[in-house]
Image 1 (cartoon, protein in one colour):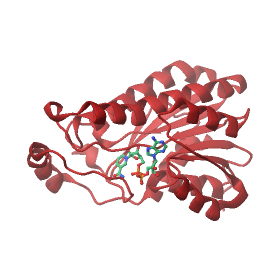
Image 2: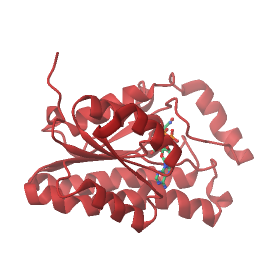
Image 3: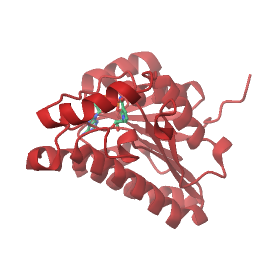
Length: 248
Ligand SMILES: NC(=O)c1ccc[n+]([C@@H]2O[C@H](COP(=O)([O-])OP(=O)(O)OC[C@H]3O[C@@H](n4cnc5c(N)ncnc54)[C@H](O)[C@@H]3O)[C@@H](O)[C@H]2O)c1
């Protein structure tokens, strides 16, 4: 039996109410972490509280709202060891000509700007102690142009750039930053095709190349590895966890 890797460590997990975030919160807690679980859904967090009891602090709120970021920081306290930026939403597979301002603004705000704001808020605690780990959840859509609509694709390419830049600036100060790029995962994320042209263009590609759907626990394993000291020499990596999809 291996040692728990997160004993006495505080880890912020966003999107902890469902899917990849939920599996990651459970994995971290099973290895001793004090988990600060953040999600839009109070209801989902209540279920997590039932599963994890007092190993958990929950914050419900919209991460696109600075007030939620402030509440997460207050809940986490002075020692933040790691952040798992997992919360995210899909678009409706809109190609550029069909994007509404509402979809663009929301997808960028949740998938990218909120990630920056939470990381920005957590960094001073990590830098003060000269150690910390951040893992961002990107997507296969951040590795190519054919896995989602334009807003989501742009947001996830942005996640990669944010990851590399953060790793570049802060790895010398003891803070590692990495990303995982999942292929299809069995979660509650909604991905409705709202574009006829996207259906025609992406549909056949999905049918011929899509790998088997992964379980959220497979992503949690990769995320917790990157957050742990087992990955002490890994920073600035964009790790596909996609059943080999990116190799096609
Ligand atoms: N499921 C997939 O196939 C897949 C593939 C590639 C990437 N991803 C990425 O994985 C991440 C997790 O998604 P998932 O598939 O587990 O989805 P999910 O919908 O099951 O879980 C996401 C959770 O994030 C929460 N959330 C959404 N917006 C929020 C906000 N503004 N503030 C706070 N919480 C918010 C939701 O309430 C939900 O509980 C996302 O970043 C997604 O883009 C998922």
